[in-house]
Length: 106
Image 1 (cartoon, rainbow, N blue to C red):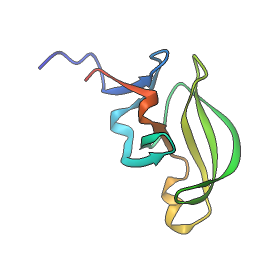
Image 2: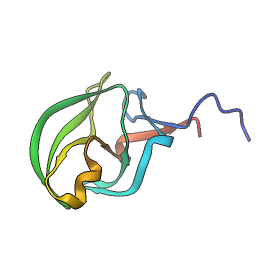
Image 3: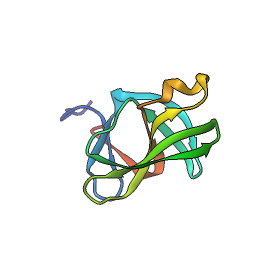
Image 4: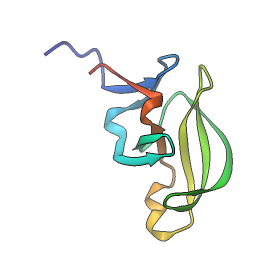
């Protein structure tokens, strides 16, 4: 076992800005149009774009794209509002696409 320098986290794949903690993962079972994605309770060092209604695989949601605060790359989206009762648990949470983030301190 190596010495861990801090918490296990995920960073932007382009600029290595830390954006989310492994401990904040709610689900690893999400899909985006580009492949697997993780649902996080929240993200750090990100900017939230304008809110818009978007038809996703699980129905209509109001979402906002999440951008890396350093390089402005779009990393995923934040659920602002879920219109279906069964999807309400996603509100306020963030989806980061797996191919857009890299593991640090593992």
